[in-house]
Length: 476
Image 1: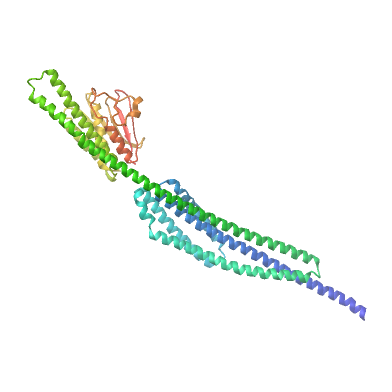
Image 2 (image 1 turned 90 degrees about the vertical axis):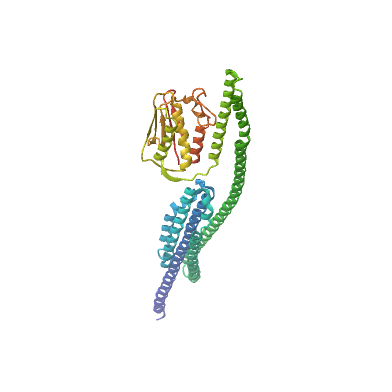
């Protein structure tokens, strides 16, 4: 009976051993699956945390670029802002995909999308206002309260999302530790039954260690990225502080130059006029009181002296006008350019009644510029056209908009000029015609150029000798 029993017991023990091995294998297999799942979710949580940091980093870059542009007005500072606007939708979609399994994170993400949309809208409005309003609007824009509150809300939402992932990380790490313990127990228990289970346990241990090292490296990379972001933020703050110092120095220098210009204008208008009035007064006295004793040559000399004095007075007036235009602030408004040109043309007709003048002014033209300075520019351009067409029987002067050049134009049929000397056309006291042919101060076109440049525009001309001239200008 014993042998049959042993024979029966052996298969039973073998079956029990097989069952134990299978159960142990099943147990080990379940442990491996649990570890793999937990490792996946650990990596997934790190991906979510990293993606949240990327979204917040893009938002900070957008705000940094906007602030740099508001302070400096340099469009190169808008590069991080433009990149952030392009990258944020994709980053938010990626974050939505990563958190699709978590309804609470999805709710926070929807809130984050709305807040970022409002914040980007505020930044764009500030940039638009800075572009249209110039450097004087940067201080109120930088101090905007709602924009700061919106950004604080964005950071709070990101912090809450990271806190949720930290909570999930703690749970998943605890589950991983439990699974690790189960796997180790399974390896120790199965080592007496199957060497292959030991090998499998060793492979599982190595695999788990690799996952843990990978997770630690990911954490180190995230920490390095955060430190780099903080370093760059500190660098930007340092650059902003330096830039503010440069702006203060430049502003002080400009104020000094303006004071010197004012002093020069005062000197020209008072100190230089006094001796001119003396010369003109005594010359007039000689002409009137000693007319009987002075011969024709002397009278001619006196007339030349008085003409030179009057000419000098006109030059002083032109210089003062040029100085005032340089220092005048541009005040833009919508006005009728056609009406302004008609008004200037009417004044010129009244001043030159003996001339045969024909003005062809395009109707219905409007402009957005400083009407007072624009009138000064048109007066100089149109009076030049009248002056340099004085040797033709009928002066024909046209003014309008040139769609091909995308600019205003003034054309006459006067004396014209040699384009070889066109580079000297808009400089002060640079005249392309002699005083015997056409009298003038040499300041008119320089004044026009100052007005145009003050509007951030440009002016150019085309002409040929005795073929008239065409001037184009823009007012940006």
